[in-house]
Length: 313
Image (cartoon, rainbow, N blue to C red):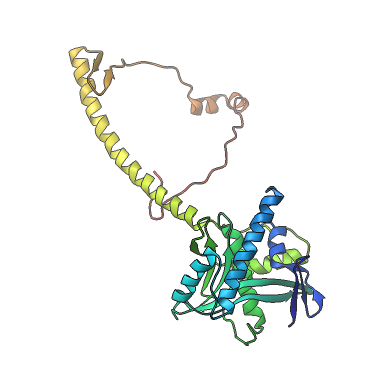
């Protein structure tokens, strides 16, 4: 399979045939990648130029043995390579034919870890301010899918790719530090459904949630912390009610309506009667009136978080 890439129009050709869609274009068309249309052109251009220089540096680190990086990002990646990566290939073009449509793209890096238990990986370099987790998960998952279903030579060598054990994003922060983000795998059936939607001219609808690791971790930690605080508050409230009842009885016995100290002010509230509507009785005796007095009340969208193994209070 001969794959060529025309940079000017971002077009792939496979064995002389123009690819129907690139992986990048596919994700954007179906809303699975961020849209930078709202960002100023000069900002996008500057970021793209910087990203190109960094990517070239990172590619050379993989492709050449004695290569000295010229970017801070390259220096950070070289440290990671020396410690963790056994062998790898950069900028590997791939293609897959779905029905009569070619889908093509380029893998930033495909490699094997020194730690044999970690096995092989597919990764993408990102220099954006934040990791768009869903887009990168889709990107590397599709690349891994194509590698598993084509068995084309990688860097001139025929390797039967059985699937990456790790899907990664090498994210370079604004301080040029390397952050390795492990990604969730998009199921094969979802990838195939995306291909089918593109082929038949339909819009892909998400069936799964992909969220940033940091967001998920912070949500988990805060939910557990709040739950613990609620349990403490419940115990404290029970104790407070106990002592409030003792004070109330003392105020009634002594005929005192108000009392204050350095911390709190206590006010005795006399028993009262208030008029309320018995909605169950109203519904039973006057169903017509009850129905006419109902109104639709809209609520905002929200999510409910439940800690596994615990019932909602």
